[in-house]
Image (tube, rainbow, N blue to C red; front, side, top):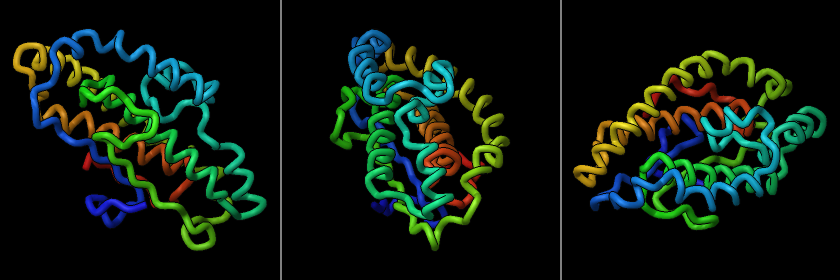
Length: 211
C-alpha cells in the first residue's frame, strides 16, 4: 500500500483529514457515550490486551488482537511474515485509529468497521530478507524505550489539547487547527513506534517527530 503524502524515509504514514465544515456540537458533547457501542465491538474483535487496560485506553491501536508473538517466532525461525497476518494487523490498526479519531473529536463520522473515512493509514508490507534483520524482533520493544517516555508526556499534552478543543467546538463548532495537528501528530508518532516495536513491519527506527 502506498500514500503519496507519506515521508519517503519512513514506510509508515498516518494522515487524518481536517474537517472543513463545522463539527456537530451535540455529538461532540456526548462523544464519550456515543463511542460505547463501537468501542465494545473493538474490544470483542481485538480480544484480551497483551499489556493492560490502561495502556489500551491510551493507545487504542496497541490493544490485544495484534499478531505479535507469533510474528516474532515466525521471523526468528522461518524468516517469514505471513501476508494475511500483516493484512489483519493493518486492518485492525485502521479500525482502532478510526475509533481513536472519533473519540478525540477529530471527526464527526461514526467509525466504520471497513471504510477508510477520514483516517488514512499506509503501512508497507516488508520484504523480510531485504527489509528486516535477523534477531532484531527480539529487542525492538527495548530499543523503543526512549519513545515510550516521550509519548507519555505527549499523551498528557494531547489530552489537554482535546479538552481545550472540546470547549472550542462547543462554542465555535471548529477544532483549532494547531491543536488538531498536534493530536494527529501524537497519534502518528505513537503508531510509528507500534509499527516498529510490535507490528514488526520495519527496522527503520521511528523518527522523534510529529510530522
